[in-house]
Length: 151
Image (cartoon, rainbow, N blue to C red; front, side, top):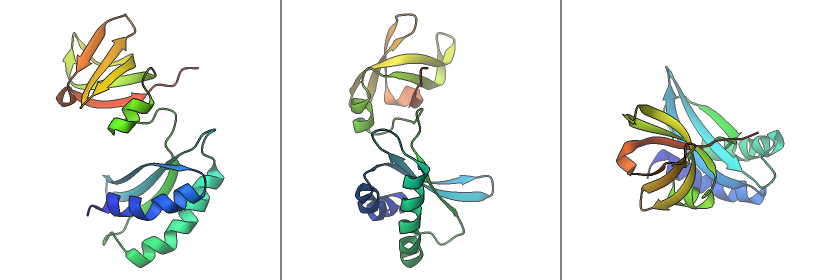
């Protein structure tokens, strides 16, 4: 089992007991440092108190399970307004929402552009660009899709 899956299984009941949703778990290397991050979501927004409560409850569990042999930094954070969409359920939840699309290769001279999420079907994403162009993108074309906050 991957570290992120193991940590997600450990964190889910703790997160849900505090009225939050487990949005994602990532284990990444940034420079010479490693980070284990748990991302939370909650109707009305995630506060610092939510992050602190989950971190305090998770610390002893991580110490006991010791899922990562090397040194790492542990963080609990909000998924944020401009969170990446990764799972099919993420895309379904945010149909109609404004997004940023980042492609691996430029399409019509653009590699990144704002759009609205129209459809998601088995890895294929259909978006409406701000200039009214409807595009269907294959999973292999898309580097990243994240929500776009509009103020």
